Length: 216
Ligand SMILES: Nc1nc(C(F)(F)F)ncc1COP(=O)(O)OP(=O)(O)O
Ligand SMILES: [Mg+2]
Image (cartoon, rainbow, N blue to C red; front, side):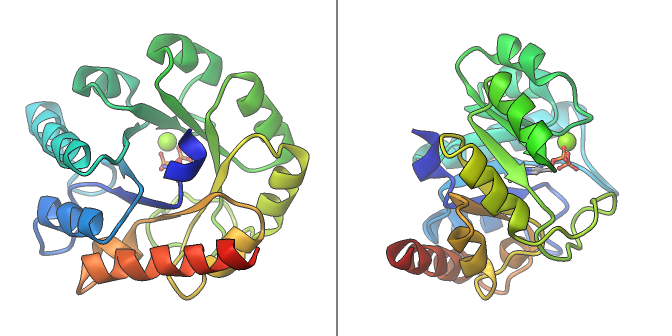
């Protein structure tokens, strides 16, 4: 069941770890208890071709070793080539129904920004939706305006069967309200990928959301 795997959803590409080896950062995040990982190779210096394939295989193998779902962002062909557990697409990355047909029963995540897009994603067979940016983000230059937690609450109330994750500027300090709004998890790039101690950062986010779930 994907809902339980969405708690601490780490997203990273080869260029998100600053001066550090991204594979070391990923393994530390896995030790810290992330529950899902998305390979999102974007932005300046993004790798491609054989280099991306090799990096993706290494990320996949680390996730498998820790029993964590390995999701690929945008690139359905790469996801299928890598034998990924699923794919995440945005509103401009293709038709969700078509992607569902291409990936079979693998995990399908869709970015949404309003209830119409939630409804469409559910109809297309999405396993979860990503909603944001909840807070100001530094990871996505083309992000939409900050939306806060209200869209998460609206989606959870209107479509309680469709798990959602909040994304955008989330840290251990502000993860609580995201979960309190009804989201099943939080997605994080920088708070883990550029942390001095990614293992500790992942653990603190996991503790923050589990505390909120207990009180919810
Ligand atoms: N990559 C994402 N992952 C999630 C997840 F739910 F998985 F946390 N939610 C939202 C996005 C954003 O997806 P998209 O709008 O296509 O932009 P980009 O391809 O630049 O990431
Ligand atoms: Mg995308």
